[in-house]
Amino acid sequence: DADVTQTPRNRITKTGKRIMLECSQTKGHDRMYWYRQDPGLGLRLIYYSFDVKDINKGEISDGYSVSRQAQAKFSLSLESAIPNQTALYFCATSKRLDTQETQYFGPGTRLLVL
Amino acid sequence: GENVEQHPSTLSVQEGDSAVIKCTYSDSASNYFPWYKQELGKRPQLIIDIRSNVGEKKDQRIAVTLNKTAKHFSLHITETQPEDSAVYFCAPYSGGYQKVTFGTGTKLQVIP
Image (cartoon, rainbow over all chains, first blue to last red; front, side, top):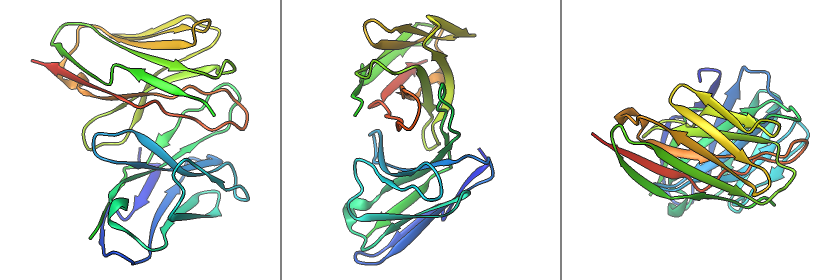
């Protein structure tokens, strides 16, 4: 979906480096999420935000931090990258509706930590 | 939080056969039941969804059925084709300020 973009699309970094992954959306959605996907596995929630002033930890937040700079932007930081953070990272957005929660995913960022 | 399980975790079918994937959830307040498809190397995308006041929904070769009493819903794919090969995720939702919980995923392989 071209309305949810992620930068960079691919990143190679070294152990101990701090890196930032960025997500932007033009869908006007209030909710944004960061997921991690390891090869052959499912989607694990890292952090989520229901509006600009709201940040919540997901199931695997250790070693990560986030910033919601604006409604349209949600950044994920790895404070000190380690090799087991090598994975595919997805950003997703949704619009708050009481009867529906459809998530729209960005194209993903492939991260390799050496 | 919500416990969501999918079965089977992997499924191989011959082209033209049917495939069924089941999603079991724990939150009785869940009222929205979507299925996402993730093709190899791509992002997950919604393919079909159903709300709690509907028992079944069809869209060409795919359908979703819901059993709220037993707290499970299923994805049915008929006349499978090689392009149906992908990982499928369920993600039941209970509304309000609850977050979505994705199922563990089912890898479907359609053998030509």
